[in-house]
Image (cartoon, rainbow over all chains, first blue to last red; front, side):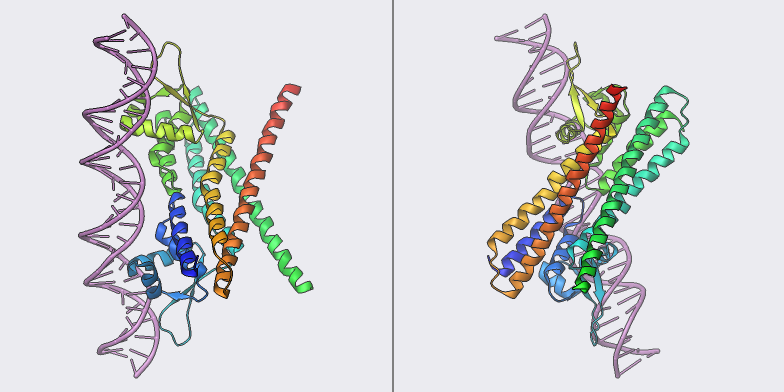
Length: 168
Length: 168
DNA sequence: AATAAGTTTCAGAAAATTTTGAAAATTCAA
DNA sequence: TTGAATTTTCAAAATTTTCTGAAACTTATT
């Protein structure tokens, strides 16, 4: 397999996988493209490479920035904006976990709390509903704090290795 | 807030949240409905309650069964099939984690392995691509085994409590 | 074996999401 | 300022996903 073939396969598969977990295909493909690119790229280069429109590139670059997966780079003497992916995959994974926690887990807690505060447990059926809501809250909080502690542990493991590097 | 209102809010929000994480809205709503229902329900009851077609109900009930979140119940003297949700939310959460692991994490490992085995590291650029693929594999394996061990720990905590119950 | 009750399938319709591309807005240089 | 380069926005088009409903299939009853 040649380099370009491997890159294409990676970018294509990454996009396909992403749709299965509710992430926009193009966003993932741009991310994959930037991950594999040693140099930062501008909108025109991404447009040409993935054969997509300027508007699409723009929207998804902003999304990727909001996920903290890529950064804008202003090259001296260049008018155009260049984009560079975070290459440290551990950092990428932590970033994704944090975002998903914020976007997926926190809204559940909010909704459950809202229903809980407004429904009086004055009948057996209401009590049953409240029981389920309470259970969901427990599980969600557990998941939340587990993710949190794994993130923290993982982060300090990285910090440890970083420190070791300086102790050599 | 009255019972029906609370139920509706729960079912509706659950459906909306689900779409944000790549799960079909109807599937989540049927799951929510069954979670809140003390009795098992048949296709006609679900159709009427959520105002959706028979085909849609059938498809999503099968999906929910494949996720291990609901079970078919054959009531004596009844021709129709009834469906009952798993009410133990910890079990539900474990089931979802297992499925997502299988559906989201395992395909990544497969793809990365495939590219890795076919791309020779004979240039610097190829080596760089292989480095990223390797990193992704490391992170994915780490995530996989972390989920695995949390699941296991959580499961045995449950087992522990179950056993305690009998030691009283 | 015929019929009735219930379930599954799937082509086409409807709905939701994504993408395009051109116009508007912004930024920079002279 | 002006105007050229670049980025952003957004209505409409294209695409993808979901849903419907009727026909086909399966299972149970007489």
